[in-house]
Image 1 (cartoon, helix red, strand yellow):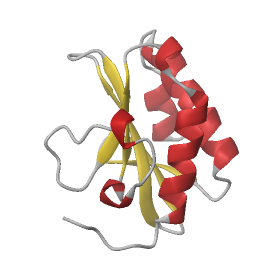
Image 2 (cartoon, helix red, strand yellow):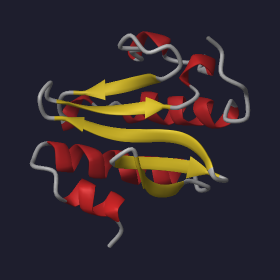
Image 3 (tube, rainbow, N blue to C red):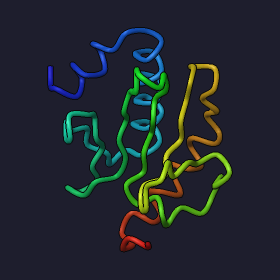
Image 4 (cartoon, rainbow, N blue to C red):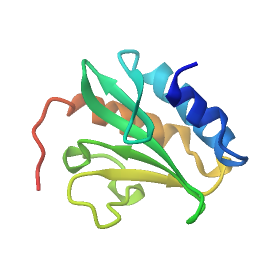
Length: 121
C-alpha cells in the first residue's frame, strides 16, 4: 500500500469515510489523476502537475479538498474558501452528509479545465 492510501485508511472516523468518498468521486470524475503522497498528505497529480489534495484537520475537525490552481476556478465560488491563501481554494467538509456530489463534480471539472493555466494572484 502506498503512503497516500495509508494516510486515508489510518484516519479516524468520520474523516476516513469522508476522504474515501472524496477519493472515489475524484477518481471517477477525472480519470487522469494519479494519487501521490506529497507534503505529508494525499495529493492528486495530472501529468506530473499538482491538481488537488485532501487534508484532514483533526484540530479544526474538517476535511479540506484543496485545488492547486484555485485562483482560476469559476464555478461554485460561494462554496470555496481561501482560508487566507493566495492561490489555493478548497471545499471544506465537516461531515460526510455535507459532501454535495453535484457541486464537487462541477468544481472538479472546472479545476480540470483550468489545470494548464498559470497561477493568478
